[in-house]
Image (cartoon, rainbow, N blue to C red):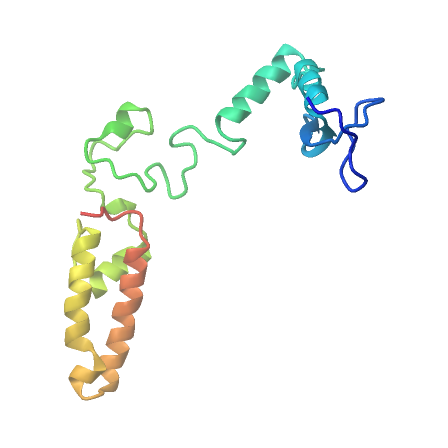
Length: 185
């Protein structure tokens, strides 16, 4: 270990009485991990041996801290708890596994085919592209290309009606491309 004193422009070790360069950082506290104390190698090793991240917390607080870390301190919800449009929101479940998970009761008289997941805008977009449910993202893209070739203003002598129809097709395609309710294939 070097016994050289720190140069005037370098940090000095924060250990009392130490004049060596403070080259190694250590966090100041659990609540402020981005602010550091600076030590020489010997003193940073001593500091780290003595430093207890959970000092001052009881068992319950430590458990809560560990649980929060398992989800990177981001909010989480139980499966199906954040429903927006009724009991079946944006879940493609062709095998009816959601019912087994307790995500709601499906009415016995009504047979659901998955189209109930679509928003009104998505249903309108399917109609504009002349598609029916179920359609995949690949179907939408293929149909979009066909309709663009038919309704492009250049293919129709610059007709105003063709231009308006193309705008409607583009808007429908954008809506369905952003949809989470259509399977990829």
